[in-house]
Amino acid sequence: MKNIFTQAVTNELIDRINQLTPSTQPKWGKMNVAQMLAHCNVTYELAFENKHPKPNFIARFFLKLFVKPSVVSEKPYPKNSRTAPVFLVANKQDFNKEKKRLIVYLEKTQQLGEAHFEQRAYTSFGTLSSKEWSNLFYKHLDHHLSQFGV
Image (cartoon, rainbow, N blue to C red):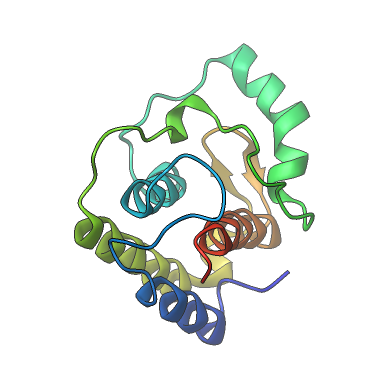
């Protein structure tokens, strides 16, 4: 899996995001392109902001035990896989705003680098290695950019 902390991978992802337009159609799924960008931003909101409620102890236990392995592994997500409620985006979104936010998050992640993320806690899964953080960020974004053909 590609390392999201490298400048080359960050540039590649930004180039792919810049290929999207407000009218880009998905190859699968229900979200439009603006909703997908907002959905991808949730991953970074959970990493950098305190705007989503934290799961309770029992939920965190089950998330860590059953969901974490698939999220931080190198195995790609299947098409139309289920998503956690916090990631659901059904309302209208501003394409340009969400695109800009996602690029800013990508640049921030790359600039902070691997050392910043090593053994840093993620809201739902507890402490992650920098490799697990990279997989979490890259795999999710790659999945949805592929969903929209870029």
